[in-house]
View 1 (cartoon, rainbow, N blue to C red):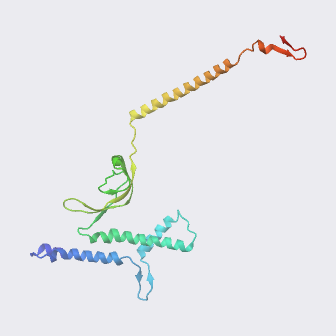
View 2 (tube, rainbow, N blue to C red):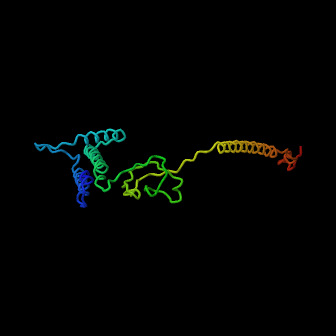
Length: 225
């Protein structure tokens, strides 16, 4: 249809939009029933091979970090992997091509600068300049257009503050400050010990004459030695 529209003269609109409508209808049908369970001619219901293989791999990895003793609960939780895989396939491979122009997605990498026009997360407006992406949990959905990309859904990210590396000069200054502070602490300890020693010496006094007095209770006399 695109070749017909581009190579044949005419001013009708139906020839131009027909391939767009066909694409949208096809991907709508795939997004509804694509990769669903398969019903055989004898009525037996089977899982789609691709969905079954991927969901089993996901559960195998996750089960290394969890233990579910209840059989019914384990069966229910493992079945969630199938829904997860189906939703990912439908969103990124079937739903996006329905849009006109076709929507695209973009994952932000670790340590990319935070851009609130393209990202959504928890941060203070005053700290955006000092923050980067730690984890991007959902990509940005956008439509490329002639006047710039149109953001359909901003990416969901978890931000983190930038870890600034010290320069060589800053490291040297930190070392010098640490050495001086250590020397000051050791000198203060020595000073405290000397003060304690002096104070102990001053407390030791020679006994005065009163310590040599003896009271003779029998004769009621004070004898001085």
